Length: 101
Image: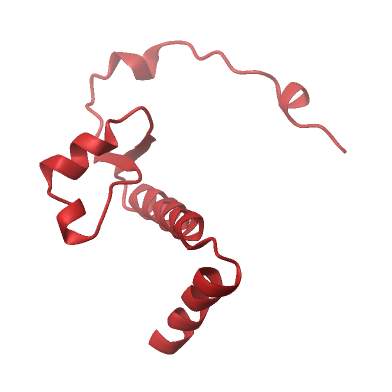
């Protein structure tokens, strides 16, 4: 498996020259698996944007280790008395958001 992964990385690094973008895509694919797996286990999860990723890099000293933060996922359990769960939801109809091309 290592050689296969190295082959794909080499293609992105040397032929397509889009390694950083490709690596971000790989993180998002794995984040999707994390979200699905958490739901399967009954764990609530949410991907978060607007997070100060540079602050995370600094807090965990990621850059000196060769890493940088790309995304954040919050995991946990909802409380039984979550008032938000009881509030009415406002959703667009399926006909409004799904169209046939």
